[in-house]
Length: 390
View (spheres, rainbow, N blue to C red):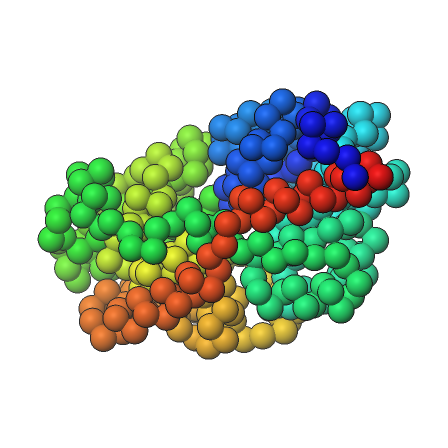
């Protein structure tokens, strides 16, 4: 078996297509850098990956899009990037390729790289337990080793003959078991005794497009109900912030008392009493911060009509999926009206016994997901690299 020293100067390629993947990949990179301080790590990623010396050959924002139909106008550009990266990696032959989530892009790339003899690791198993289970056949052809972040996933991939390692969820390490509410409020200059609502409409432009009016419309109704409420809205980047402000103007919602933040989503969640959040990884972050929440999502009508028939379970929010019950409300598409969101959020904000129950359940969830993810995922990748060297 090859030693770490023998592969220290080789290249490791990675692709993360959105902000949640950037965070997840940064944990893996932090573990790999311990063993491979000089390795060239490049591909497509974001700012958190760059903190570990990762070089992005294309801006991650080029890939950030969601929805079956929303991707169509961007298809040529995204496909062109995928082909260019494929050609670059086939010529370079990195020691391993790691696709971080973003399966529509990464699995196709991984299949071509694996066929050319480049070992492939996929970090965060596609949610085949939620929808499109038939993808596991493609995964078997594309992936040399799967890293999963939920305990129940390991058996699914093992039964399909796909080498797999459960590494825990990186967010469970990043987020403290006992968030410091007081410190977060000081950091954001929020009154210690105020009621604070964090609003996370999404990091993708398409999410902002469809969620903003309903989410901020709900904030407007809540502000009328209790004028002393504070609303904080973390923005994923400057482009997202600019677009969000534009959407507020179009919807006539510029009078809502919002505090826009540049990043700082975790500080906002720590400071919040309740959260309105778009479905996705962010809902798990809210749960790990032990906050009551309402999960909501809107998308292009055509995408919704197709996707709403494709799920295998009644939940879409990760906290509810992990709990196997509706711990928190989910309001989707036409149900996600400003009034419905405001009413559901008010209950989360005002029901003290509900808040205590959720804290207990979310604490149990946190412990179940807590592992040394950086080390476990790095060791798995190193094993794949060593096996390829033998």
